[in-house]
Length: 316
Length: 316
Image (cartoon, rainbow over the protein chains, first blue to last red):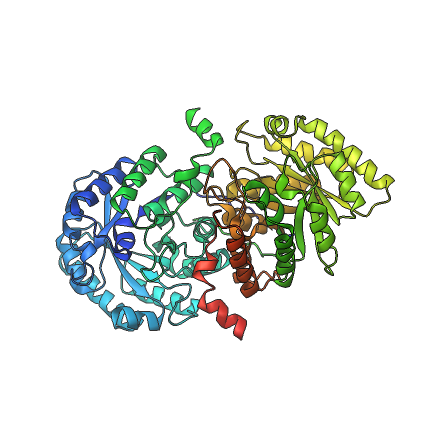
């Protein structure tokens, strides 16, 4: 018999909405700006306080996200909402600084092959760019925080195995470069709960409380199991997409990010507060299903509803 | 920061195939006996060594399972295969004993309301029936083992909350009645990983190593997260259905049991041996999809395939 040292779970956790960036960038439909603003407002009304609103990349590369500055400007009118933007390089970072984003997320692929294929830079060249980004931020006297998202941290479709030691080395390098926080991303859905426990512990050992978030994809159905394992490791911020949109445009129907509403349900069921309102979240998902007609949405809660036991708890 | 006491995982686990019983009983299609035998053979060839082949209930109640004795007889010709049958009462148990089933699984609902609705007996009346079943087994000099499956152990759609103390009390009662082992079932998909850790620990305290299996449904997407939590609690036998069939006939599309092939993937990825062959399992799933045309199958592995990292490991 295994001695089960049941870990006390955190009391609160934050779900950072990624649908407007990681979700929309992976699907064909270009959502009009008006609907994006309605999404941001709806997510805010449902209790979400961290939203990645888009990406500062050239519009010809990602026309879906060409209106990121407008969406960001709207998000900044909502009190207490922290708006994140993804920036792949210094040029994007300069726009995020100019737009006074609360936080910019810089992806750094731990897979050498993926980094070259995606950004035409080695991971260490990206680290050098992050040094320049931090310098630009400081020179501008900007308050924009810098998060490095360690992508392909659990393996890569191009390279295969990614050594945990390489992830740890790169985390150390970007912390030396002065970034504010790091997150670990299972970009391609290769992680399992045991890997999550192990890698988060290794990165925690070098990053301490600067390891702030987990980003899981549900490609092979382990998204929520991995989120639970990360929660057991003390992580309290999770990236997710409403309706589980996103994923790979080359694999129709394949699941994308962990589903916001299902993750919110798992956390709430375990007594981990997220501040989210399920009725509003599900109403917003229903709108999204109409806006993205023809795209595959994922998740289970929208169909199954909350368990009777949770409804009783809410009503009590 | 939470101190994460990473639990050592078991080295081996068994997936008990439930598709032929829990899966087929919940869907409209009546699978012909020949295809059931092909399924049993295919599961065996893929490495499955425990299969619930059907249920000894009146054929008018579950015409889908009317050929259980034939399927059992075939399963018994396969060396090393442990065939389980569900029996709801003494009459069913007598047939299981007569047919020399390896194990009979007697469901006992921890929810008073569910027990009455399903079997027209209170849980304690079912315990009394289990006493009679054990006496009949012993009087026959039979080797058939008795497992009690504690259903609605995590809550009930009719009654709502089910007190863990009541689950523990009933487990104690059936162990006093001399059953060989007990399992805990989340019949309606209400469990979360924290509940799993807690209830399995409480039941372990009274049942010790006689607590042998976990049965999860994936109604709200938490099936694999719950299986991981049970694994952390030392459980090494999991019920699952190929293609995730089953679930509730009144909720079209709703997920049923945990999906055999996805659970097998999660376990294998974590280095927990199951003895299962993924190519054969997925080939069998493809057959099942044809046999059950019109029914909804679930799961992700059939679409996403094994991660490149696992294929490299297998090839090495």
